[in-house]
Image (cartoon, rainbow, N blue to C red):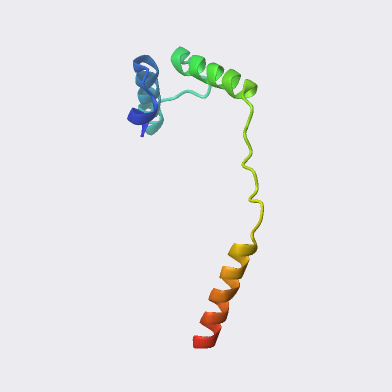
Length: 80
C-alpha cells in the first residue's frame, strides 16, 4: 500500500525506516524528528485545513425505492 500511496522517494524511505524501527521496538519515546515525515504531515494539515469538504446531496425522493422495497418484502413474506 505504501508503494502506491507515497511517490516521493525521501518520504517513502523515511516511512519504511520508521516502520522497521517500530517492528523492532527500536524507536525511542522521544526520538529524533523525521524531517520528510514531518514536512509531509505539515503540508497535509495545511492542505486539509484550507480545503472545503463537499457533502453529497441527498436524493430528491425515495418513493420509487420505497415501493420496490415494500414489493420485495411482500413477495418474500408471501413465499415464506
